[in-house]
Amino acid sequence: QVQLVESGGGSVQAGGSLRLSCVASEYTYVSYCMAWFRQAPGKEREAVAVADSDGSTSYADSVQGRFFTWIDNHKNTLYLQMYTLKSEDASMYYCAASRRIPGSGCTNQEGDYDYWGQGTQVTVSS
Image (cartoon, rainbow, N blue to C red):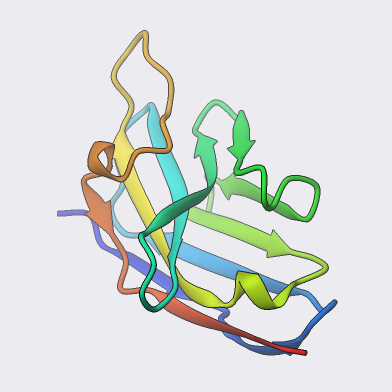
């Protein structure tokens, strides 16, 4: 059973930066997908960034150019570097992971992810 543990959340002023981390335990898949989702109170969970074990990434339009994600395979860790944070970025951020089916890519659909972390809160003050 894969366990994901996020860290790095906190409170920051608008325009500031934060780096989130997600450590995966005993992740033995050769090809896999990892992603960051977020959910604010009263809103649906949305995908923020997706990272493929092959190094490719994709981002939601709302964070393109401000957020960057990557996987450190040696540390089994997914990172999300967030710059120029806005009040609308305030949310609970979740890490998710799944095995990537050969021949297919990683998606931004939460139903395609089998493993989830407990979340880390990001607060942005103006």
